[in-house]
Length: 475
Image (cartoon, rainbow, N blue to C red; front, side, top):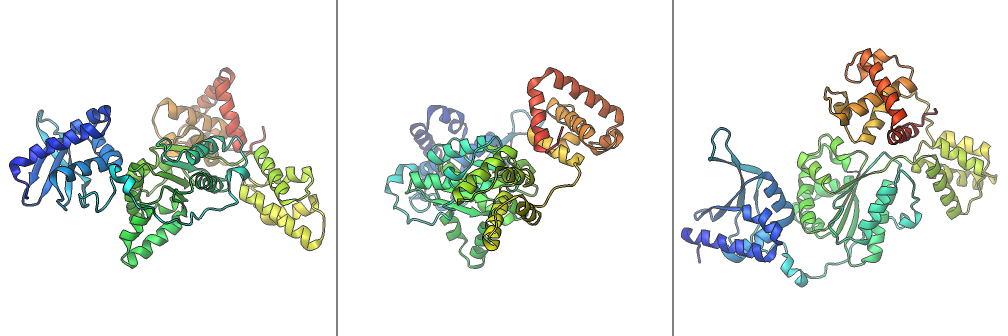
């Protein structure tokens, strides 16, 4: 039976009753009570709802879209058309009047019959068991082979929690970032392997951003994009490595945005890996960056000397090698804080010792290191210092170089000037120019201010020491 215009508002009242019965009271008061019936366009069979803010729209899209669609289907029937959510904002200078502005993502094209498209929460028990998939994980990269240190302790702890409690909504998504060679890929494989070990029925998948993009292009060319999206929407734990490779791939970003939203609002696990923080992903769609940062951001730093040494000891024990401790110390000191370089040196030593039937000693190590490791003998620059300080304080270089006098920017700015003066041969006038075109008196004042703070604030002194250690500066 066709819905009459006079009945549509009454049907929306029924929807509100459904919301009250199926969501928590505070969720209803905060979200659903603020949804107003706009109109039902009979000719177009379109339901228009009014929302008071972008926040309400985002909450619906990310967390409660399934509740909304089931309620609409149960009351309005199978209308099989797009419906629009329009955001209502108060018009400037016109108190009491509303300017209706359509959100660019407002139109949601799907069949409102929940049985045809997405299985609502109330029907999950009827879902057919999906076939097992190859998770594409490295079986060698587990928590048992992952060596913990100061640079990865937080990430490892959160990762273990995620692996052992995949149904929890805490820490979702998990965004892991850090420089190349710090163990990010090992950690996410360990998370996936642990989850798969504990929950064999979970569909866990590890994929590189490049592979995802290649699959997307192929699906587009073959006219199978719906199958591509549908497959990824069945994943229980999706791990995507090197997402920075999507920074210029607009179409790939748009497709992943919809996959992300589906997984997130259905409480599926999303783990993302990048060589930089979300805020530094230039060219990435802002709405996607916002979602990347809405869970937990776990930074991994290059391993320090002690962690490098511990990793080496674990590896040679596992491989049954006999390498003198002074040789291990030399490798740990020269590998530039890269786990990949550490492993490359040990593997090369093994091959050389077998091929030439010789002992692994310092002479052989020095020969191998020259070929396997790029020795960093470049002088320290102001940009090196600025980058490390910004990572520590979670701000951007451009913000530090700017004119803002906010404390969260002034301290990193002054600290960068202090470290540049202490650990480079660059004159203060040049340091000022490189950090926002400031004069030499500003640099001198900053140096004095930092020296004073170092004397009076032990916590700050510890932070500075960590920065110095990360830059491998010899005091």
